[in-house]
Length: 273
Image (tube, rainbow, N blue to C red; front, side, top):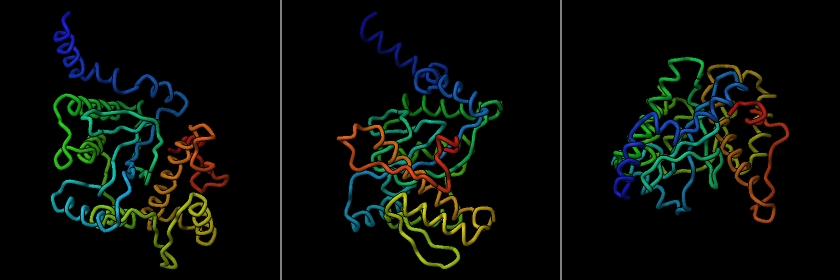
């Protein structure tokens, strides 16, 4: 077969959703994993920091992007976590799957679960595969009209999972989008003081103390989005931990911190990612 013929065959193969499922989505890995997890996998909206940008420029660019309707999540890379993988649309115009780790993670927000023993959820996953096919074969990356934000929104809709939130979590995401603020800050719902978490340890100690003083915090529906925001911070810190843990000791930025008493538990140990 000529090189042109091979290219045409390759394009046809990638345009076939069944071929895409085997080639781009590690379904066999997930199905094997489901045997240990009871068939249920977590899905998350994940936001990752890009290059360092001056604060004023962040604010200006965020306002412009929001005004144009270009970015749902400010100047952050957006992707979706399914099972043990991050599903990205990069500026090379292709959908990629990567492990759950990142150099500059920010937050990982719970959006729902899939039970692959349930036919309805399998159909949702098939829709995601069709979106991968569409983006890989028919879409061209464009920062304003076809970016990782558009892809993430389409995947969330296919999964029938919300990507917009109420309460303090929604307010936090609005600050990212409209003000270009990328800080892990949280307003205590009881004292109304603002806390900023620079490290995983600071976050864990704060949450443990908060629950000790106010046991209702992790069970009362009134605080559901407060708790969701704190967990989103926690999973972001874990992404950084897994990124550093994979490096040789000599190349680590610092000793990775895996908390001994994380209030949300180790996500892999507890299968709570």
